[in-house]
Length: 364
Image (cartoon, rainbow, N blue to C red; front, top):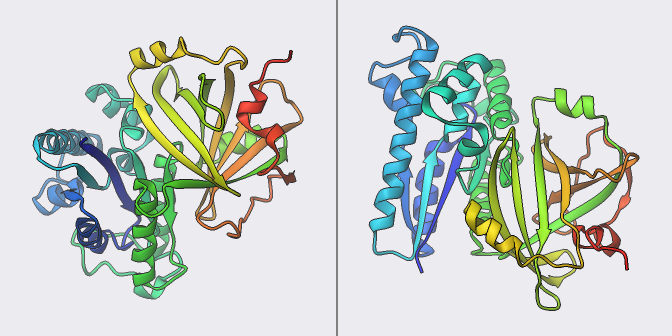
């Protein structure tokens, strides 16, 4: 069965995206993937003479860029569907949400309206997002404008832009930030490992740590540009013993996407997890197979990027004094750096009482 996955490689200036494209093509071609690279649209336009300073306004330019970017991605997907290959990886050198970092919110809203888009449709239209941190943050000695004619940012501007790019993608269900804590080759290897883990090539399971926290300061979360609120409706389906099947509706401002997730415990923190995108009609059909012993869970999830980590904070309507914080980890003993504003009560990773499936159980 053909499987097409579309991912984004994004990042601040001088983050290593150009090298990453070659690295990904070589690494995943060796793993049996047909790798398709959607080239960066901004560099194409700017080096061709179409730029924010040559168009009438920045908004005029951004409208051209976003429309071209969406068209290219659609055509790459169209081409992929015709190919005689089982595993196809479409790699986008920047995704459409990157453009938000180069516009005011008003301009971005106008562009979305003109092209019939919204945050959920554009952000979650990609299967995963991998952000490479600019060399200006943690590898300042290697930051340079020399290898890209379209790059003009100072070190300070590059760091600010890096944060704005992460902000644009915060809220995606699968965002990974690759920092500069190793040398550049190590950075590329970590990127490869993260992509391979997402694809299920190396570790077809998830490792998740979960913490019970004091009810968070909502004002702090909603004012934080690196935080995004998503509404989630989660329903458990009838399943075999040991297996967990759930369907989700997630989105914001009346725009939603739908998923089915199947989880099987392996050992410790490890669980085999597979996720399938659903149409709205499939979602409604599967709702008929809901487990009658469990209620549908409604929760608000805040995605928070902090110190290159990606946290999920779940607010439940039945609690006013506590909440649940989760983070995916690559190693069971990985260091976790919590924001000062988050008050940890205790870890509940192995406490079955705080699993969503348990919270959904109806009392006898």
